[in-house]
Length: 165
Image 1: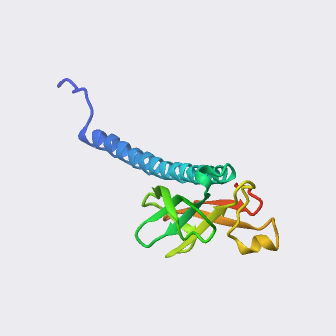
Image 2 (image 1 turned 120 degrees about the horizontal axis):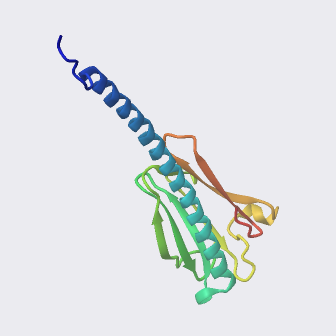
């Protein structure tokens, strides 16, 4: 009688390897999606922070200027820009900070090949470049960021009376 050999067969080892590969793929896809959604949230937070910074700089009249944020939805790059200007015509527009969105994020508002400018009033901090503000102070402008190939979207509201959410 031959002694039985102990160990695993090749088929058993292949099955274990296949299970490990499948589990690794599922975890990898989950982590990638989770990471991109976190970038969407952190970018939204960065935009809100920059808007509030522009508003505060206008309120304290830093350098005697108006401050605002410009959102550009270009075909190649999406970006937002902290800027200042001597008057509301923005003829002497001067950028101080430019932030580019990651490639997997895009603006839904402003639309493609468009831009949007949010300008804050000195002292009051109210948004002053939206003509609808003259009619209704509860009017708002919005900026929407979208995660490409996903339904995940984040929208920021900027109200005429200065509220940013």
